[in-house]
Length: 76
Image 1 (cartoon, helix red, strand yellow):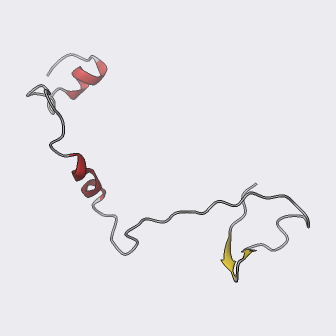
Image 2 (cartoon, helix red, strand yellow):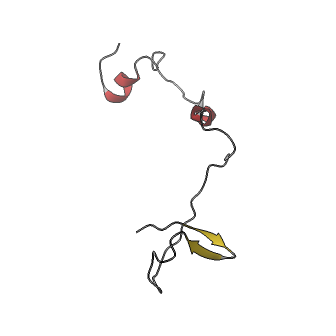
């Protein structure tokens, strides 16, 4: 069972107060939001740029034939 709520004054307040019986043992995990909450997610590829240019000794036709190198399909 999953219940949503927020912390208010150091106490977890559930959206549905009667969702759990009194005395129920629970585990609370924080839901992490995107670090850049104000930034639009219309360009998710930007987060991949930190990996750009790090590959070494890759075939020159990797972009064209990635299915061959990864899945063993015939080259184009």
